[in-house]
Length: 141
Image (tube, rainbow, N blue to C red):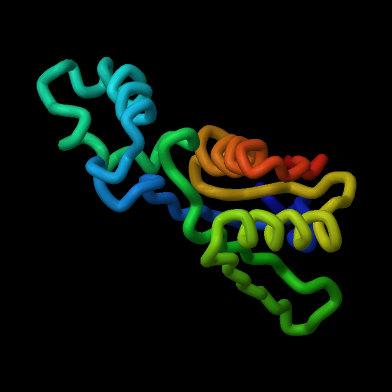
């Protein structure tokens, strides 16, 4: 079924996210209000925003990326080689490093990005965090 795909044109990726702040007490008051409003439907007013804050990492406006890991096949190697690279640490730096990898090696026509639920979560989250850090989005994203 997948024999027609060029594996050298696929970038596999996954991100790991956490809440922006280590605990709810450290969240600025205005952001607490935003978080409370944003999560009211999921909490159904049965759980306090403070007790729900451990889930803040799933929203780009309340979370941050702590790691982007990518994998890709190396062209023209026999046997086929698969390389892994992880970007971690300061979020702005890891986003810039990820963008540089995409721009320098994976900014080709017919490139495919691949990840579990990546279209619904990873790609939009990366793009939103890049916008927050005022990093120009890659055409690939």
